[in-house]
Length: 376
Image (cartoon, rainbow, N blue to C red):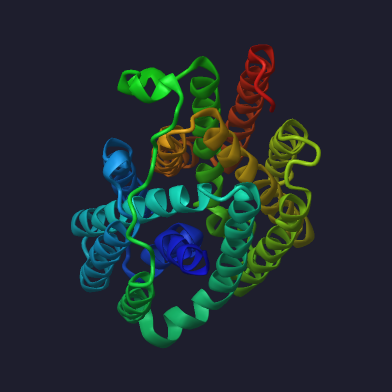
C-alpha cells in the first residue's frame, strides 16, 4: 500500500504545485497567463486519455506492468518539459506527462479500492497530497531561484527513477472484476446507472470549480498585492491545515455514512471560495485556503468511496479519474477566460455556483441510492 500511495503522489505532483508552476512559466519563461494555464490544463487532458485507457482495459489491468510503463512515460515527459521554452511544445510535453500520470493514478486507485478500508486509504492519500503541496509551494520560489525551471523538472525526473524502482515490488496480479453478480455478464455500459451518472456529473462540476481556483491561487494573492513569499507562506499553511483535516475521514470512516461529510464538505468549499472575493487581508486569504483544502480532504475520500461502492467492477472509479482530469482541463482554461475578461471576482462567483450545483447533484445521487435500498 505504501508503494502505491507514493506512486500516486508522484503522478499528481504537477497538479499539486500547479499554482507555482503557472507563476513559474509567467515569470521564468515569459509565458502569458493563458499560455501557462493551457500548459497545466494539457497535463490533465493527457491524464484523461490515460484514465480512459485504464477504463477500457480494466479487465486486463496488471498493476506492476501498468505502473512501470506509466512511470517511464512520465520521466521521459519531464525531460521534455525541462528542455522546452515555447508554449506549443510545453503543451505537448505536459500532455505526454499527463497520459502517464493518468494511467498510474487510475490503476493504483483500483489497487487501493480492493481493501475494505478504502475510504481511509483514499483519505490518507489526499491528506499527504496537501502536505506535499504545502511544502512544495512554500519551497518553489527558493527552488526556482536556485536551480531554475529546467533544474526542477530534471530533479523531478530523478525522483521518478526512485518511484520506478519501488514499483518493481508491486504485485503483478490482474485486477479482478469477476463477481457472482449478473452484472458481470451485462453490456459494458450497464454500470452507468442513474446514481453513477449523477455522482460523476457532480464530480465533474466540483473539479471544474476547484481547478479554476486552485490554478490561480498564486495569481489571486499577487493581485491582492502580497509578496511572492507571503503568498507561498499563506498557501503552505493552508495546505498543511488541509492535510490535518484528512484525519476526519481516516478516523470516522463510514461511522456516520457518506452523506454528512460529503455534502458538508461541498458546502464548506463553497464558503471558502466566497472568502476570497474582494481585497482580502492576508489572514483571510490564508483562512480561505485552509478551509478550501480541508473541505477537499473531507469530500474526496467519500466521493471516491461512493464511486467504488456504486459499481463493483471498478469502472465507475476509473471513470471518476477521467472526470476528475476533464475537470482539471476545463477549469484552468475557463478560469483564464473569466479572469482576463472580467477579473478574479467573477471567477470566484462562477465557481461557487458550480459547487452549489454539484451539491444538489450529489444529494440527488444519494437519494436515488437510498430509494434503491443501497446504503449510502
